[in-house]
Length: 484
Image (cartoon, rainbow, N blue to C red; front, top):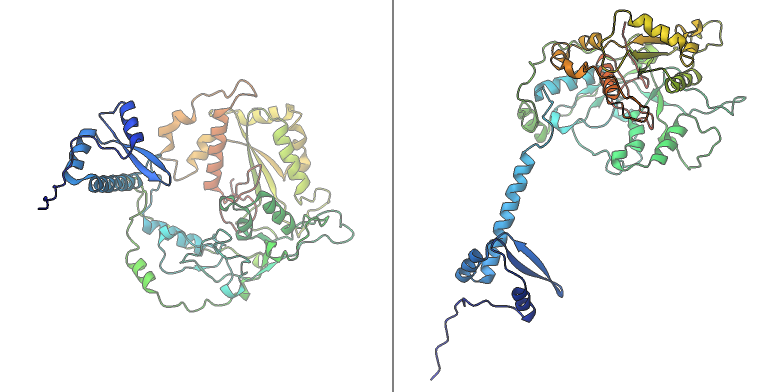
């Protein structure tokens, strides 16, 4: 008579897969807070300690069996990890948000800037703005007159996203700048009224897309006509031309009839007023109601003269402390590189002469005294580095100006009612560094503040010393400002 099969039961005694596992268990002191699991990986085993007390693990394994208990534990841990990851994504860790406008106001700001011709770019508008209808853009030519990129959007680092803008601006003529005899040894100047295409520059110089610095400098040099020695040997460099001239506005074509909205655009238009997804401050600014009517910038061909009154060519430099060789070299570079016509008896009527404004701070984060302007010019006259630039021949070109932090902050409508609550940070009585080797934090902070104030007052492109990277799309490739 056959004996009945024994019922399977979980033994309370410890079980091991082999002698090595038993030896490891006997030689190591077990913990009361975590259990060690062994995961086979090829011919080896991966040791994974998990925060599960051995007593709880024994109860679960005796109740469900080791295989089912392992599956339950891993599913629980994966779910817990996914929950923690989702909480971390929703929680913004770091600085507090600075956005003070809702999506509707952001959309109005973008539409106003585009209609004013301040977005001469074919790059797509950020998806966070949620513009269902592609706006008309007078800053770029119609699509049929636009340059087709040599690479695809993904290869060039510019994602193909919609919506973008509909170009209704003047056509562009990209210039081949080359030296002409007899001055073939010197690079020529760019023609008056020419504009730099920042899309072409960023396509080759966007270092966030792993662009090479040498390739960027090669494109910049060749496109500006600086390669007079013909050191660059490439088959076709037409795509590297980034300097162009705009045709007169009278040659513009009427905008094409817009296509009907797609289902995606209709959904975006219906849900566009929601602020979901924006990281904003708790207290927002009042809704925008004072936006003026946009006035598109005129092409150079439509101007009455060579200088655009809305875009005066002014280079700014901020300096705090004694006037030394660094600002001296910067001003010499301005004199030697710009088309100033100082050797002529009368200014050239076909050239818009630029200016250089040197902003002098009386001290790090210090209030300007009543006689600070006279004291500033007295110190400049006594300085061997600054005295040459005070000659009358530079009077209309180089201008020294006193940087009064109080007046400048009061001149910014967004700051004039709030900055005084932080005046201890601005006017802390700092004296700067005591040695040239030390880090002068007050002067650096003041120069950063001056830079951002000029951003708000002027239409500025900021260029760093090592390599230029535009911070805004502007019509003119120069630093511009209008300050009395």
